[in-house]
Image 1 (cartoon, rainbow, N blue to C red):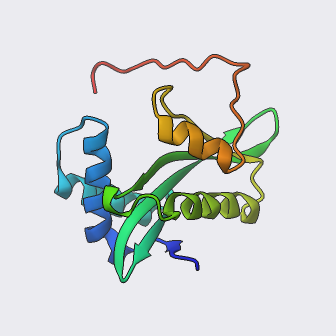
Image 2: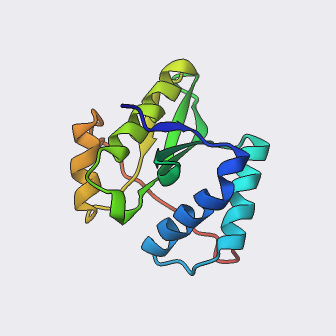
Image 3: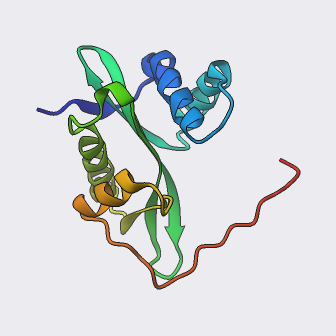
Length: 150
């Protein structure tokens, strides 16, 4: 049974609570009003695609994807930037359903793939993603430059 769908403006209040939990998981300060604004902007500007999982009318998880492009392939990729399921709803398959939404978005937008990054110590993610058909791409090094002014 499919428990996922595309997020709408009507979801922002509940979604912001999940987004806040996600950010706290990554050691950020709680800020639900900022989360609401951020999500409204993403949905309103069509900067990202957000899908939600729900159970009995309550949001239980989400996935957020951003479009990026491959110059060598001359096609769009989707960056799976955020995936979160509330801890009380884990183990019910919501993550896999949300990942299936990401794959369907890839297919329907004629993109060449979905990319993601996760920590080496994320044991759950490092089991989940290969189980969903993702391959570890270890032939490149991933680097980051951080703007210390932000």
